[in-house]
Length: 83
Image (cartoon, rainbow, N blue to C red; front, side):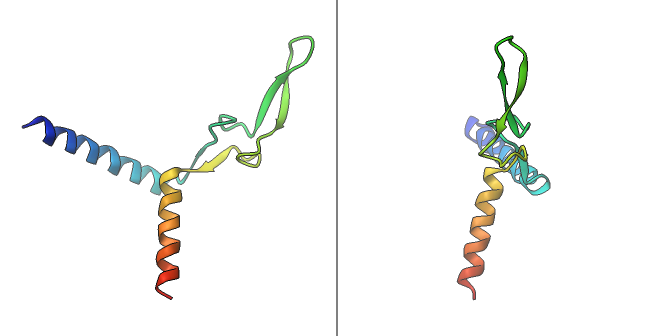
């Protein structure tokens, strides 16, 4: 097999794997708060305390995956165009 065929097959497998992941689990952990829903801060003594709620995920710790967001946007546009 040539290198181009192997590269194409690899990219196809990775893409299909991501599509399946977005289908089975549309929400992933928030990258800003690492899925905790809040940040951490330390007081003067160096003890770790709970910080403010994460604004990106609204303190849920979950955000919609990029692939699922693209799919939702395309489906919404398709539905709006066929009415």
